[in-house]
Image 1 (cartoon, rainbow over the protein chains, first blue to last red):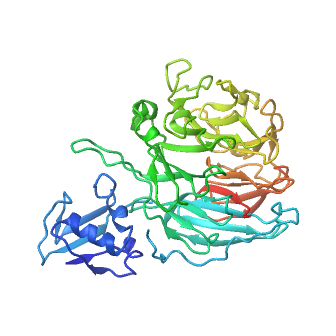
Image 2: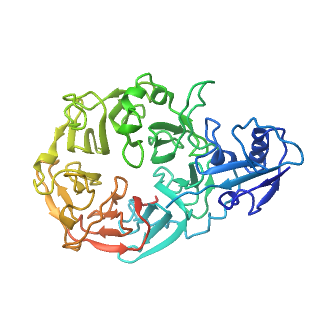
Image 3: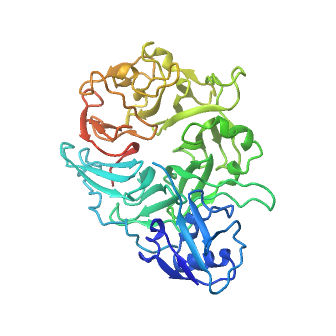
Length: 86
Length: 401
């Protein structure tokens, strides 16, 4: 599955804006991302499994509400830096 | 452990070591570890502390709340950082700032049971190396108020459950309404040099707390300290500690700059005495930082701010000055030579003032306006060492051994 990485996180992905990761849910894909790029998950998801306040995660064009959201092989997972001030 | 070297972990000259023949750190070689709202900088002096060179920014775009050197090895640096969009983390260097790596497991609260709302660390606010007898141990304080411990030099962190899960913690820490504008924090982590199990922390808000069993249990230590935002007279907790320090040469003495004045406590007595009452009335005794002299437990500095009316949080009257006491706070003297005589509206945050171990001691502070000021004669004359930085959150004097 293709995962879109925002500029804020590309230090973890060796500056790649698109990476591949596997999983049947958003949570599983993020876990795979963290295996490949250690530390990246905690900067996206807090210790209560909530998406960080100024980040957004979309499956294709639909914003996710839960890490349990299911994924199909053809989906794209898009992580975006939201508006954040100052 | 996360081994990836990060893009912003640029190479920079390491902190240089300079030692006299008697083994003491040469007074002149100092590195100021500067945390700002937009990154970290290291300002290094020559051996006479006359010429200064800045390196950085490191972690550009990250709010860097604190950087500290491990005095036990003289080479490990930890840096508390948080980018605007991303979660908080700790970066560590084992080569005096030459390269940095991210902690493999940054401070994080326990996940709450299903159906309950759990806390999450917004940012790591304070870093303190552990006791001399416990190499590799560090403590971190967070926002909201949490205490964390690392036993491996900052690679991995565990919550100190005795505090974070204490049944009275919700009462001690209050709700969000009682939090300062930048968020509630745990800071001022002090370790008794005689006993690694004897710990003090300060909460904003919450007050001063003490543990004598390595953090398994805690008790408030706030008697005598004002809390004029709480209707209860002399409350047991709920105070707003701005900065508390224990002098390693007199560990039974505590000093505190509080939201409601400057205080001293002599242990085992457990009552604070307001030494800020001895400050000039027109200046008051409100401020954030409090700095102790490296060799004289009776000497301390504060940097007052305007805490009147609506709390402007600027230098009183636009005339910034440090105040020094050489007698434990019984009297104070203004030190403003070299500082703006007027229209100087900056102030100094709680982690942004420090002293080195020189003789005479160098004293330094960073301002909310992005300037670093220093004095080589214990505050008698100030010189601006660096300007045009982002808002400065912290300044620590590192003298690697």
